[in-house]
Image 1 (cartoon, each protein chain N blue to C red):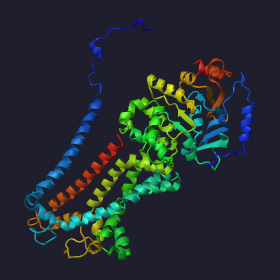
Image 2: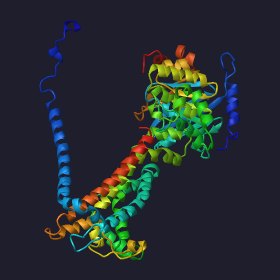
Image 3: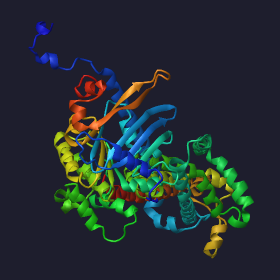
Image 4: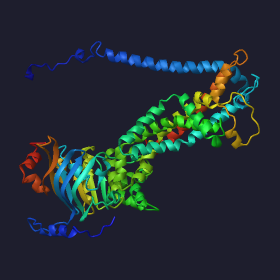
Length: 307
Length: 286
């Protein structure tokens, strides 16, 4: 019976037991250490790159950004690499609608059959294929097979190859964003007599947009950072920029920032100090700017959605 | 969708004519006539051999313990079960004499006439105005929707509360307001029928009372079918009540929903024909 139980409570009864949650505290500590370690490593990379690049950044940053490649360390710059990387980013972005459409098809339209599942598994696997393999694909298909279209080892061939490389990432992240749209929202729209297309266009895509944007930013950042496929495709180390028109530039010799970095780092360090690091800073700045645009776009959409 | 007289319609009116009501009061014509309804989720038979009539401009409540199939039945009235891949419906669901599961019937057109309010308020992440205007827009209404929006919000008793912030997000409203917004949104497409799937289960008693008042106010214009876990709610708002139960199938070992009885709400709660109903409404079971 409950009669025997005392109703008097002492403060000691309500105090936390000593060592009650020791494993929880240890776990929290480990988590904090991991976070600190991650920050420290990123910080160290930035610091190292900035210190190495400081000579060039502090003296001739503008000149470095605007000058083409040169055999003179005091004149050499990454203008060609910046242009190549921007063109590649542009071509990659042109293929995003394909990836997003594929994701919407897989999530919203495709029946759950073995074929659909095979495609989903394949896309996931493709996202894990080493980039050098995509380089070989690019060499065989876009440089040699479709030479008439791409002009051989060109920025177009590189752009399409990198687009194929990041497309699985776009599909996977977009599909996840579409899947995360709550079913209650779809039901609400269906319940009002919306067709499947209307539900997707007016509810699913807007609600999934922030997630899709995140995926596309990751994809661009990856495409901008890849050097291996470009090496296989045949990006030039040094070339002279003529007065070609835009179309000829698309199909002619090209380079990109990761190629610049790779080339600079192979040159003798006494005279080429800091060039690779300075090119890295330029590449990082580019990725950050793209990130910034995406964050702003994301914030605006989220605000519009009222969250 | 063609809302023409179908072959089956004369039978239905005949059935209505033949029904004997105790005091010979005029009986509202049937909006829904459900016969031998069976719903399967894959191999599982969720609902077994349900016959139900829903009368025009009445509130019909579907009550019963969890898993008795009442929500599943409700979702047959506007073909929401179509959205579940593995769901299969057998039997006939006649809406004004037309079989809703006829291959010629477009579920989209059905849902424009038979609106639905869900268990959890699910406003779109848009402005209050855009939430209400959404239905009319997808139904093809062009031009200025201010009037429809105002009329719908007034019907849902929400206008005075939100008229100054129509452009702000619906997600900033309280749960009760959100649910009334969902009712306004459903009313905006001018449906015949409103289906409500436990509309108050996520709301506090005051918001619940507000929704119940609202149902009473609009029942002259709409036929309402409500699924509820709350027996007092069924007793308070509905004209007729259908009691469902979950029965164990000896052969398969699965539980499946069955309709026990459908009668005037007063009868169901005071003098039900079946002892299972009595056990449930008096709180001895469920």
